[in-house]
Length: 220
Image (cartoon, rainbow, N blue to C red; front, side, top):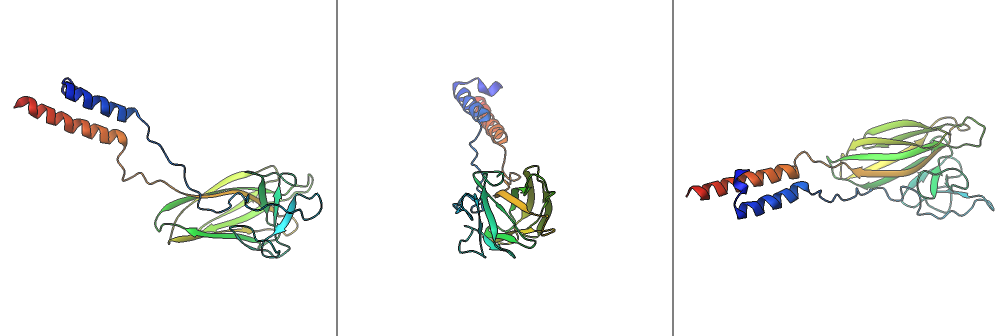
């Protein structure tokens, strides 16, 4: 451009060019869910050599970060020695229709969030087990069916109604055929970029203003 010919303008253009070519650092999204991969509890085997245990409201051991309800013996916390996991070393299995996991955490009213999680179904190598699970958070709901073939990743977008949200997973289906397994639960805020000017736009605006200033001085 013509106004980039003087030494001062060249310096400004070089600085703006660097800004245009640089990529700002992006912070990793913060997971609002506590113990979303169920790693905070250490498994105390239910039986000698069995890499799982019943945990939660029907037992003496709470599931860290979660409120649980079970109509049977509790929620099963297990590791890959018992069944596959999707993240880390642990996962959980809901044992009875109506069994629930829930957690309440702080949100910002009107902010959009995304829930993500992984679901599979118990497999013993032969039976046709299902993994029916209902998910609810701030008026948004989703019903999924985990597969014995492995974990499927799901997501659900929602807008916070208040300054807190309660996430609930509920086991559905036949008590002898539906054993959903859950892992890698995350809730993160969705970035709102609509009101934030892009770096390139800001740089072009600054460049234009600089050009006008230089042009006026040259005419004096």
